[in-house]
Image (cartoon, one colour):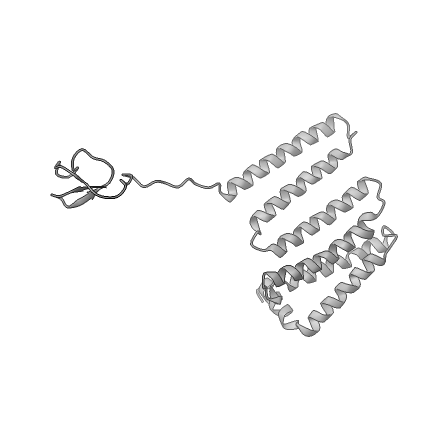
Length: 221
């Protein structure tokens, strides 16, 4: 830092003379400062990141789609790969925009995982492992993870109770697989439905106000 005794001002940087009076400058204690402020490098915005991820997704889908067309669909893994890329893109984009709501992210990823597993099961001859074991165990785990996550984050019940209701709806949808004969071993699915019904019944009876409050927030009632 330099100082002009005549103008009584501090001068940034190193000058041969005072830019005001052309007088002689004195050097003061301290490191010389840059004459201009240093601009911080701009971080990649969420929109730019979204564009990059989306471009990579579309490019990958075009490449695999072209290979699938040129090989007349000979390789079944290509369809699964394309679906996996779609799931990855959807997961990344969703996480970007709802990253502040961990329970919502977990619920979305579970829904995507269920759809993918059922699709893979169907594409590989449908043994039935997805509807007999994967869906019931995943939904049961989702309820546990939702409650544990809410406790760790110290959320009020009205902040996550609707996610439990959504989980119940997904559990009840298993009845479709049971009724149309796709689920040959129904015990896991029926037990999970039973657990969810008991859970929601308890919430309605003992915490109806929280459920009502959450509904009012969602629908602006």
